[in-house]
Amino acid sequence: ENQVAYGHPDPMLNGKDKISAGTPLIVITDIGRDIDDALAFVMLSSLKKMFILNPLAVIVTLPPLEDRACLARTVLDSLGMHDVPVGLGTDVACPSEISLKPFNGIAQQNPFYFERGGSLMARILSEAEEKSVKLLCLANLKDISDFIVKQEALFRTKVKEVVIMGGASYSEAREQLVPDETASNNSCDLTAARHVYAECQQHNIPTTTISRYAAYGCPLLVSFLDGLMKTNHLLAGEIHNSNFKSMQQLWKKVNMPSWMPGRGKLPARCNREWFLDFFKVKVDDTTDLLREILQGSALYLYDSLATLNCVDAYVDFHFTPKCCMIAGTVHRLIGTPSSSGVANRYYLVNEMEGLLKEAFNLSLEGMHLHTNKWEISEKVDDERENKPESSADLNEENTFGGEVYDEKKDTV
Image 1 (tube, rainbow, N blue to C red):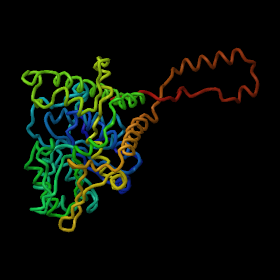
Image 2: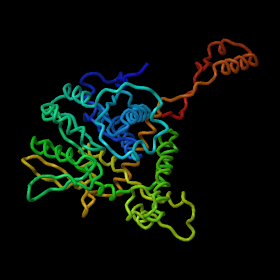
Image 3: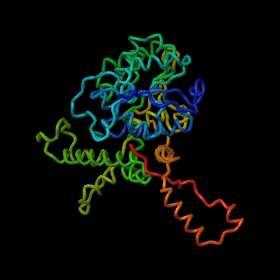
């Protein structure tokens, strides 16, 4: 039978306790296009276990919706977030090349029934306190735009802030924020992006916009993914391998002439020199192995940065946002062509690496290996046969209950 993908409720949290378990959050994602959204989920699980953020739902967008939702459900479960429901968002038209690129192998493991994203969001917001829930958009803004049209009252009264991975700028002439048309998430549905920014400013709902320039200001090294694999979490291995395959494909494309069909829709400017400069790779005459080239490349975690910006304390400590006062409401912009908006790169990178590692380690807590009870029983019997019986021996506790506790590799 199909399983309703509402997740499993946390027995430790009920009623109002769920609201006090951190800032309530609804996430809109296009997980599967790359490893970025998956790592944002890893970051989110760490903040959830620290009672900083309390994810109430995840809504997926972009086709294939059900496969993408299955992937989200699988990743959430592997990180211990069984209680977070997954909903189906809008089916925005997009090129087929970007559908579930790196995660084809684990998207269709189990059949689920998924609630529609709009109804899921409405149900959660109707039960929430006023101005309490943050929306984190790691994809296009179509789902939020549609929700505003259908449930404007709920959006105005229940949403505390909208955090957007994309890009925007302040127009002095119009005295308002306008979305960056070159940002990938915005360009997917520019009309929806304009609508969401306009509604937020009109109804005094704060926004925090993180652009790609923020990620450029605090790159990690791809070799960091090797360290994550040492946690023995299979999702860490999947992320590592998927990233290498994607980088390998990109490296092959940038080394092709611009006229070759094998490059797909890669712009002509994206050549070998662009790759080496953008990913900060140093190559000399002795560097001939592809893995050696890619291991030293930069890793930009756009969506993980956006997740961090849902926490005001992290924003205050790690970022220097440009604050725009519009009709008495502060709207924050992090990352511009002239400034990354990162206060201290090294502190921020260390923070992100620590949270990601901790998430994998915490998700493995409580895992144990069951040893064969008969083997233990036979071992105890042999010891008793070779040892003289006494009252002390009879009172001694020398059985182990059939379990030996140890860490176990998690499964996705």
